[in-house]
Image (cartoon, rainbow over all chains, first blue to last red; front, side):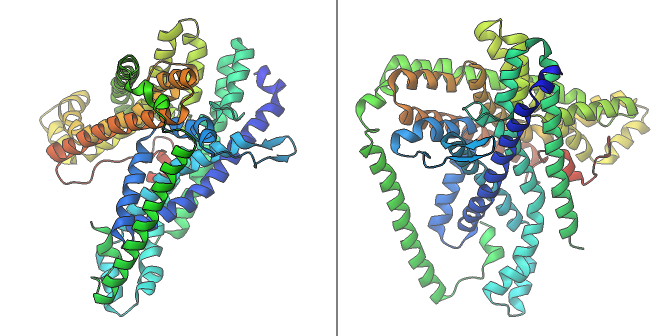
Length: 228
Length: 290
């Protein structure tokens, strides 16, 4: 345990990176994934097909390949994030961090798209038909009847996707962002005899973070639940 | 497609005309995007023959397919086999009548599901693999993936056993079978049929996760790719080729899963479990809750 306590500031900084990766990529993936889902369930067949192909491709590609693309291959074709350089106290957000955030967002947004699509499909057909039957226009059907129900059905799968994202932030550690995984690796390297303690510390912090996210999701789900 | 049926009425003539316009605009924009990407690749000299030459050279094709695809498949299947064993032990363990076994299984499964697989991998690598060279890295990845996927499969097995109609277990008890017999002879064989597609889908997850072996320099497709782009400086073509290979393998696995689903389960809903147990059961933190 001494290795962790002696380097407490490094551990705290590492988990700040983890949480920042999670929060930024989480918000970006929700926004981008909603956009993809809109194309996917929209009436324009071309967009729907193109999105389906894109989503299938990205979903079936390992995350680390996508991160390698943005981190190592991207700069060769002019995709670089050198303009990102923010220093907040000890935390420095540079181009590596930005590349990993974009990679994580691109990967996660496809799962968000699928979660939202399944949520929309979970709305019973009769709901939309009834709304149309009482004369609601398209916008009314959407905002008053379909989307509120779809959003509720979407919360549990979206929570799963975001928890997966939280765990996936460790992959950024394999590509140069000094977050929890990279810090754990270097601590274990320097204090090989204490590796079990170091692992357990990091693992327990991750379990706590995961529990926090799923607790929040539970709360939202309970608050939004509708009586059927 | 069922989605438009929920969202949209059958379009009238005006709407059809408008959708035609949207379709044309969208097609033009998409073609523009594709053209821009191709132009971008061409402009930065990524389409030159030298950059793609390794992927037309028999020696490197063999390396990609044998040291890459084959080893990756081996790792994924070893991990899934181990994971099935792990799942068979801990899945029914979560349903045990003995509180101690139930709590223990619950804790093990929840722990390995919540901990990122890379942390497990690096611990196993430093504890076991580091002195054993390439095979050490290989087995570090396989063991880490076994534990993670095993925890997920344990949850699948539990859901599968619970999905068997209760009359089956009652009938088995009625003819005098013991608990173990009911589980082994009656419940599990029926549950496996329901679970097969979920197990094959888990192969896709395991296969994608073998690429995380990159972090401990384990053999596999990603490492072969790294060696190629380090040697030739052709990062962009290599990443594209790797992605195509992974996607192709995964699509084949998904097709098999769909076929198995149709053949053995029929049109019923495929069995799914969410990534972390709390969100589906809504049971909070109560350990061992069904």
